[in-house]
Image 1 (cartoon, rainbow, N blue to C red):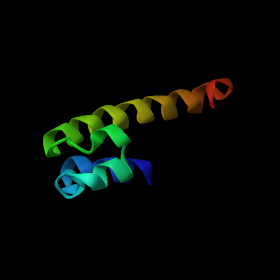
Image 2: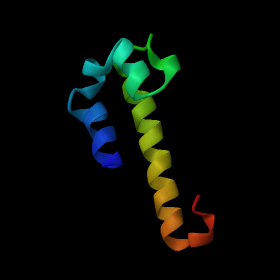
Image 3: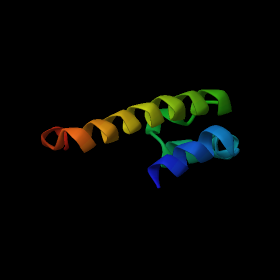
Length: 65
């Protein structure tokens, strides 16, 4: 589900829909003033880190949190 959410923001128009106060609700409080491109960049970085932590957790269970 996490990956689908980030994919929706990056590729399927979710960033345009999230512009304004909705980005504050769904992402972070500081994102309310961002435009669609900034939201897409945030989503790309967050998707990358969440994927990295998922893969690391698969191979190193003691690093899970």
